[in-house]
Image 1 (cartoon, helix red, strand yellow):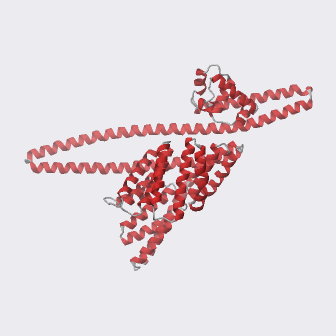
Image 2 (cartoon, one colour; image 1 turned 90 degrees about the vertical axis):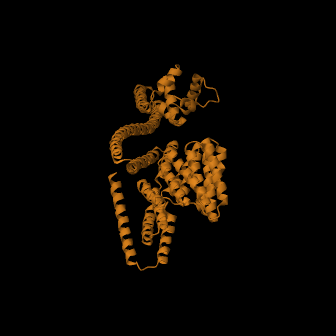
Image 3 (cartoon, helix red, strand yellow; image 1 turned 45 degrees about the horizontal axis):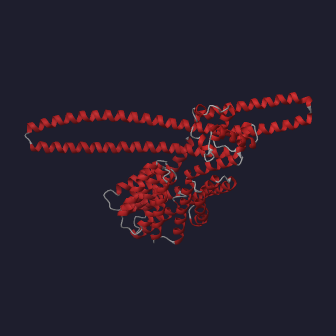
Length: 551
């Protein structure tokens, strides 16, 4: 964290130096015509719009220079565009505190304005931030506000922005598992795209392909593999030919998820690697995090435990950074809410004072003075009372949030411990299985004279396997509290080996991994699964893993 802070301070120092240099340059060129300044401003904003997703640091420098020109020209409209660009660039590099700061400044300039197109754009951008933070309800609220403002707008390019906003609403519904709503908004988005006239053909093709790939992901989430496949496979070439690096990464990530769902792990791994190649050229940390997690799972499924560990570690590092970003955002919002509350209180007191003045002018001096004194003490009492109540509520709220956050952190840590323990035990199981196989061959070669020693080694291996199981059981029960007691209570005939198998199936381990953990062949695992189904009295149409996951 210390290195991150130093890096952030150095970066801001560089931005400050650039801003100072540009300011001096503007002062030196105070004789430059307005047309020339406008030309420079336009080139800066156009270039920033091209690169803010994949090169946000460079874009921030360009937009800051554009904002200085807008200030020199005293043009609020130009400032709004520059500040919006600064917000977009900051959000692209997950600097949400600064993003909120720039959007707040933009909204202040837009106060009382009927520039619904820009107000919609800011609401949409705020929705993107809340989506990145995983606050989907808030994100949906801002996206719906953006949609509403666009319908009020009279600008010619509103359909282009409406297409994007409708797609964003669809994505939120997808994340919330509202698949029918997601499909409905995707259809609306693509219908609007047909009416858009102010984009070139390559952009139209890319936007359509992106929307169709989202169709594919919704179908994949619903389990409709056959429906999902053509949407994902047929549109990726169009994304690759016309999209930016971030969208290309998402496209190949979707294909990786698709083939992983089909259990074609080799194909899934090749697409996940291509997704990583594209996202590594950007600062899109959220996409990187998702791709690292997918790669870790795929390497695990293909038996490459070393790479699985490596990518899971990278995923954890970014995930922890996101945890820090969320805390930064919370601190910023608390500060902003406090300032807003203070302003509202000041406004409320001002209104009451005006009311008292009006009363004093309407009544006799004595009566007016009496009312003023009573009102003063009453207001003071109420304010003190309300202040204490608010402080109590805030303390309880912070305490509850802290407890919930700690529970979440503990659960994540336990989940990570379980994953690590499982991977380590699988590695040990594979080694012990190989060692047992070698001992068996050695026993045949050496004859009976050494059988006793070899049998002792067999016994030692079995004891080691039991120790591995006990370590795994401790980590497993931390995450799945009471699992064994619950399933044993319902199905009393289950043996110790049956319970082991149930725990491995709950973790969705492959037959190969289970065979290594239990020290039996994969065929024996299949037979054990069959016997377990019979003991559980499951009908053929009931999925064994789904049933176990209920406990």
